[in-house]
Length: 347
Image (cartoon, rainbow, N blue to C red):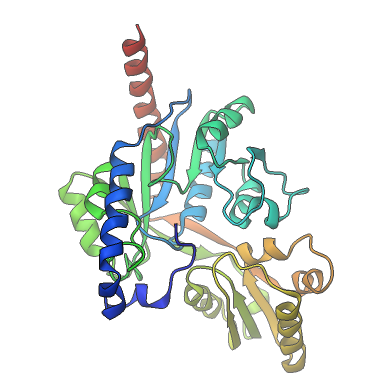
């Protein structure tokens, strides 16, 4: 899978997208076949997958966190399963936020571990069994919709209403991970994030296919110390522009912006430059929670930047407050049907 989305993916398809169309065709055939026919392992717990149509962030991680919070309120013991993207560990591991660094387990896994038991595993079936052995009775999988070899009871696909599916082309000519018709057949529901119109066509397509559509928005937590402050905002996420708009919505005055690739690990030179620019101009460094965990636990300039930076925390807020509970109920019902079918088949 391509790890970084080039800018032309998010504009109207141009010569670059069309020049790569033959490769996109081949990629789509393979990805579509894998999604449709892949043999999947089954585990004795409900599995909710939070995925997206495209490469790049759409809000999967805050969505997974919101579902875990709702699950806990309903009496479940949720746990997160993730591949640990960006981390070096290649064995099934329980994430310890006090011990592990992002370089080992990935930044998203560290964020998730602050909310519930989190396991990283390249083999998601193994990871799911590990979660169950730790007392988890509801598994929330962050990403992996197109590739995981795990039986899903509910697949919630998150789509950003401003970026949509970009130019609509498959990797490598665009950001789409698998043919949209096949993804639409396999998903359970769509979560549209924000008030833009770039996702409207897919929402209508989902509705015609009888799929549920939920709506949510990303809400930053209050940050009174940003109000009226000149800031240096820096972010290594899929869509830094979204973060800069959030900082402005909190009253921060954007004096400088520094954008880095998604999941970027800052070099000492980059960190020193950020600190120098902020000190020279009297700016408050501001960053995302995902960027902050990549600075946490690292000595030297990273430790100083982590200490000085204001971290903007966000939550995924559903328009219908009952929606997360509905999703969990649907997943549990699907799991019960799955177990009955498996028991019947094995009899």
